[in-house]
Image 1 (cartoon, rainbow, N blue to C red):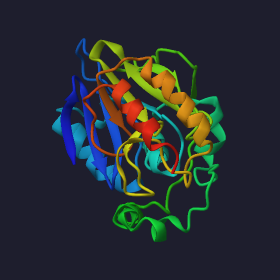
Image 2 (image 1 turned 90 degrees about the horizontal axis):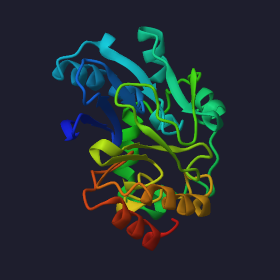
Image 3 (image 1 turned 90 degrees about the vertical axis):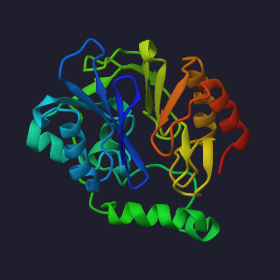
Image 4 (image 1 turned 180 degrees about the horizontal axis):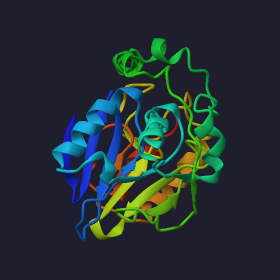
Length: 250
């Protein structure tokens, strides 16, 4: 699924229950930034989305990773090889980006499909999208904890560790938009539950830290919340954070 202008100059690619975003500069021009790189199966849809925007692959100038789990770096290596894209991520994601299956998590993963059967179709879609075939990638540029990233769209980094130790959300203040990555989602792939929440311990390194990092998200005051999994939330980040805290850990 491709939705143009899910927010001004922000375009959503949703494939196998994983979200990627294309950012434009509001000032115009043809250059684009990709936020997160999905699973390998998103490759064709990404190309189609770029063409629907009237762009060429060469107009894609950078990849910014909110974090380096396998479902967010799926086509990163291919983009580097084909287009020479710079890949931005926090320094604490460097090892994970190179080895995207070696991630810290609190709870054993195997029992989640048995305890949460609603998640089975979600996890199955991810399997068919190449979840077992992700290649690692080297970061070429590191994100500071409060930098404005020098890429099209110029997102501001909101350091939000917990899901991973170097997780960063991205704020577009002039558009009133926050891209939360997996610091806050509206669909938990491991439980199938919807609505604002942190991701289950099957894929979260430190749930207590993730819950504390919700403060940094709330401080942006953003009206539109675009997450790594699930549908856009348009009732403001403060309400989303309240909901996430109410749900707590899973």
